[in-house]
Image (cartoon, rainbow, N blue to C red; front, top):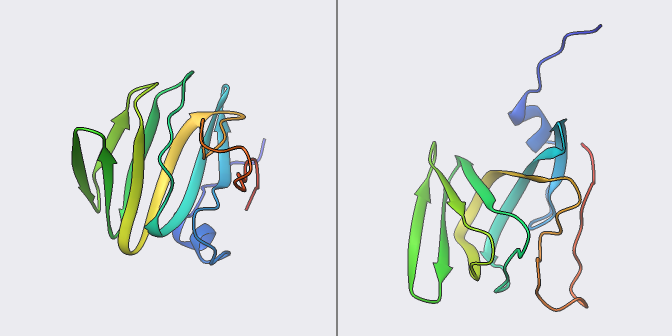
Amino acid sequence: MKYQTINLSEKLSKFNEHWSPKVIGEMNNYQFKLVKIAGDFVWHNHTDTDEVFIVIDGEMFIDFRDGQVKLSKGEMFIVPRGVEHKPFANKECHIMLVEPKGTINTGTADSNLTALNDVWV
C-alpha cells in the first residue's frame, strides 16, 4: 500500500472557480470536498443529511431564516439536516465540506441550478 498525505493548499491551488466542490478523499461513504466560495449561494437544505463546513482560510457566514453564524479560519459548523440555509462570503474563502457520497451542493434548491458533485482534484 502506498501511504500519501493530502496537501490541502496544493489541492486548492488546482482550481479557481467558486461554489464548485472538489472531492479530495473518501472515508466509508463520506467525501471530503474542498470549495472556494465568494458572494452568495442559494437558499437550500439537505433533507437526508447534516452538512459540515470547516473554514481553512478566510471568513464565511451562513444565514438561517431565524439567524446567522459567522465562521473564521480554523472553525467549523454543522448545519442539521432539513435546516434551510444560505452560505456566503464577502471575500474569497476556502472551506472543506464533509458529506455523504452523492450529496448535491444545492440540496433541495431549484433543480435547474448547476450542481456539481464528485469532481476529483
